[in-house]
Length: 256
Picture (cartoon, rainbow, N blue to C red):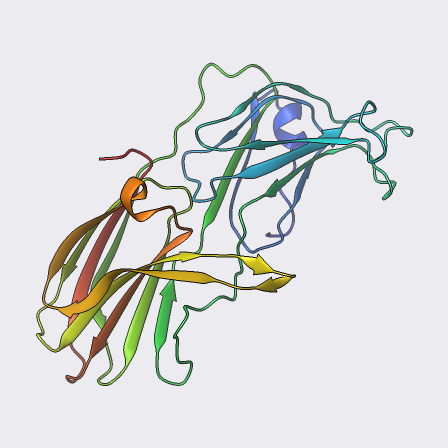
C-alpha cells in the first residue's frame, strides 16, 4: 500500500462517476472510502483477482459490518453506503463506518521460490497490480481484465547459478510461454506457485508443471488441466559461461 492513500473525495467533488485504486500490491493493504457506491469492479489492469468490500450494516450485530467479495467475473451492483455519522461505527473497534476495501488474495511481498539459494541464485519478480474501481453512479458497463504480456530479452545466467523469474497469475485461465535458448547447456523449467498460510505462518505451495529440460520451448498453462496458481515461476540453470536467453509470456482470463 502506497502513501498517501488514494482519496475518493477528490473525484466525487469533481462530479466524476468513479474512484480508481491503481497501485502495486504490498501485502496487508487496506483502503478506505468516505463516498457511497453504486457498484464495485476489478479494473482492467489488475493482477489481483479477489477484493473484499466491507461496509457498515446496523442489521448485522455484533460487528455492524457486512462484506462482499468481488472477482473479475463477479462485480458487485447495488448501493453501498459510507457512514460518517457519529453513531455509525464498527464494533469493537469503534471506527467510523467508512467503506473498507482490501485484497482477499494472499500475498507476501518478501517471498522467494521454494529451492531458492540466496547466496547463488537470482530472482526477478513482477509485483502484482491492484486495480479496483468504485462507481458513484450506475456504470454503463463493467471492464474485463486485460490480457498481459511479459518480455524478458537477453537475460544472463551466471555460470553454475540458477535464475528465477516470477509473473503474476492470480485467477488467470491461460498462459502462453515461449523460451528461446541458444545454449544446449541451459535447462528451463516451469512451476505454479500459491501463497498459503498455516497457523499464521506462510507455507507456500510450488508445483512442477514442466520438468527442467534443455533447448527452446513453447508451451501453455491452462487452469482446466494444470490448476489455478497465484504466480508462474520459471527457472534457468546453466553450466556454461554467462549464456543469454529470451522469455515471452502472455496471460489471459480467456481459456484457449
